[in-house]
Image 1 (cartoon, rainbow, N blue to C red):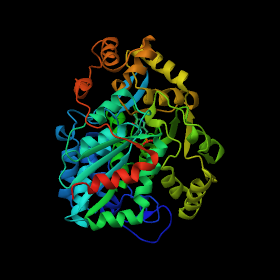
Image 2: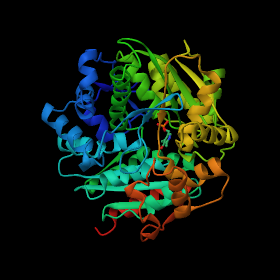
Image 3: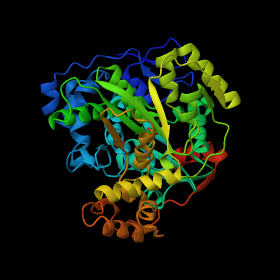
Image 4: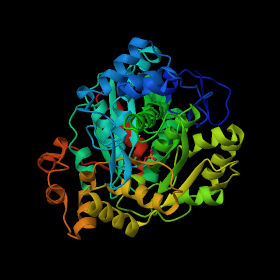
Length: 485
Ligand SMILES: *Cc1c(COP(=O)(O)O)cnc(C)c1O
């Protein structure tokens, strides 16, 4: 399988080269040249384990040996990678199906890809950058940062640098990052929002002079953001796995279509669902759910993407994004490289672009803060289950637009990551930090125990206190990577 740039340059890359480069030289994102068909019988699908399924799907894309792929998936989707039990269980609560993707070590769906990305990176580095030091740069809206830190901390030959928006993450998210141990882990707050952080990191990648200086010192930059194909590809597996569980429990018959509703920010998660559909998974509708930052909702209803608007800080911070990177991949697949490049040029110049999407491949929906909070309360009253705020955005948004097919809501985080908001939605109480976590445990009466990884979080030493201006990202990266040499 070859990978191409979304912006139309002719070069072709192997998956391993794409994973190490992160971003194409023309600024585009790497995409597979075509969608492979995933041939698996319903019988096999019903019984296959998560690592085996993920391995089969990855083997359609990666230039890795079967042994290399087995090493990646068996290490990632196991206690070693932070998964003690089933990595992606499907549950039915209050009449709705949830694909729970928050059972990894940082309690958000980012673990599904970021537990395996370090292995993909190391093996790819062996093929393309032997003897070099890999620097993984990451901008985070809250969850990617910790998941990347947890995955890459302590990995030999790798440094990981994370930038998060200073006032744009939850208390738990901030503490998870600022207490990260490991000599090779660096975390800085950015005085700005997520879009500022993401723009700053992208600017580092496209600064040729800086990259040349770093290369001379044997340092290669790569990304753990969902612009990296190595983030996207591992996410396809759980859509198949959701289908497998619906089959296994008799909720659907073989070949029956299901729909997914995905709470969306940078468009990586839902893009993986789109890939699964293109590869043959029986999918009816993909619902793209936004919070009050509903730039994607407006885009899919009006065919105009307009990032020129105020960014709201919501209770679902991992979706507080106006410039949604992976939309570029979707444009490439639906309207081609030429039009995708024109759209991205326009976005860079004017903050907006108009396109004609051929068909409605996705149905957008959104829910504002009040609707999200009522949804949490409604589901809790009905079933005793506390949804996190992002999952609740999807649940509430879907209710407004669903046409009654079998819908799976993609549940992207543990309610404990946003415990203050969840408690407030359920009981109206104002709590913070450890109090919010303890209160949520009381409210859920032992049915959702406090995840072990949160125990004692507020007692840990804060190891990372750096704050940089949005324009200081480049300088911070260079000085961090070349310090001590
Ligand atoms: C990152 C994240 C999202 C958004 O996912 P994208 O792939 O960026 O669309 C939604 N919910 C949670 C909890 C997240 O961490």
